[in-house]
Length: 341
Ligand SMILES: [Zn+2]
Ligand SMILES: [Zn+2]
Image 1: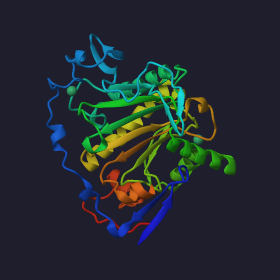
Image 2: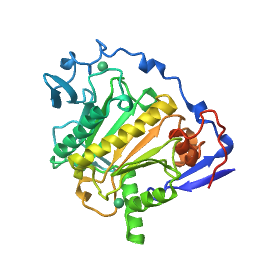
Image 3: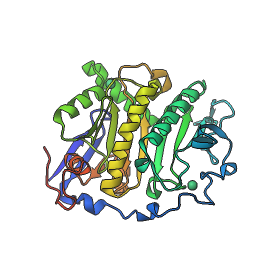
């Protein structure tokens, strides 16, 4: 049997195709090679000692003389910091200068230790670096939106294995993000409440998709997960923008992130994944309709023609089951049952 489910926040539909179901164990990939990498790789531009191989450091956190987190300009930026983002029409066609910022957060001096296996204190430093850069970038009047993301592994689009995240400050609001914002706004207009606040209330009362809960954040596999083991980490306190987070709350975020990524690492064998911090446009940072959160999309399956053509993702694992599995409540070899309720 197959089931269509809708994410109430994004209005996106997904298909759970249980007859195509695979055991999580089958999705687990062999990733021993990452663990076998050296701690220091002489040719890696992000490794200590090779600082000259990257464009200048924008910011770094130091312990003694050594850096623990380092933020640099992207050597091959998607957007450049100079100029004004003016729109220009050429008859029918519209363009603008590629103005913005593209930075890289080098998350650790260690070449072979990714976020999920780093000590909590180091994950905290990374989250504090995100906050620090966000607060700085938002002062640039040309910037409308700041996107923080992490590509882990080749199939997630990374070109360098050394653990790093990226920050792109955009001079516009992408149409897809605008669509999500409009859906959240529509829900707010219809119900008088934030769809994300309502979602975490529902998830906490249903319990079965919740995989993590501390005194500030809830981690769960969404009811309409786009990929097997898609995970959202949502702050319980309503806030539209990641940029409003204070230092104490940022540390709670780091604890949630570390715990969730560690579970993914251990239970799924360090799969490739994309992580995105979804936050409101800068001008909407005090709004009631949007609620910032972290989205993690493991790359265990490959989106193909149907997904690209329809925008509807087919997932083979019911999130109620994947949540149990990731918490370690099910043996790794147990068959996926058709648990739709
Ligand atoms: Zn390195
Ligand atoms: Zn909310």
